[in-house]
Image (cartoon, rainbow, N blue to C red):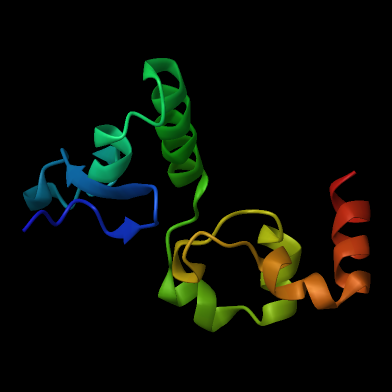
Amino acid sequence: MNNLYMYSSHVVLTGNKKFYIGDPADGDQDKYVMVISAALRLKFIEKQIFDDSEAYKVLRRVQLICLGMRKPDLEYLVLYDFDEIKKRNFFRCQEHLFGKTVMDICLSDPESVKDALLTYE
């Protein structure tokens, strides 16, 4: 069982793994390498739905989305209320929301979207 691919859709599998390169004895956990991987599902490869450049573009886009996701931080989620999280990370993909943004939650509240757009202008 491959544990690198944590998320899946009908088209791709994607995941990431963090490897710490700092010395744990020194308490140095700030240095790490992040490996982000994406793979097309076998049925799309066998049917040759995408040519090489299209497959590359799809996989590269998935990797970029994963790079932009904010990792869940329990302390951050507990210390700040929802309004503060909306102010700080309204348009940023959140891993604990499975790649969705806070804006996706607030689509039924046009005032929140309007305020966020004015804030980020």
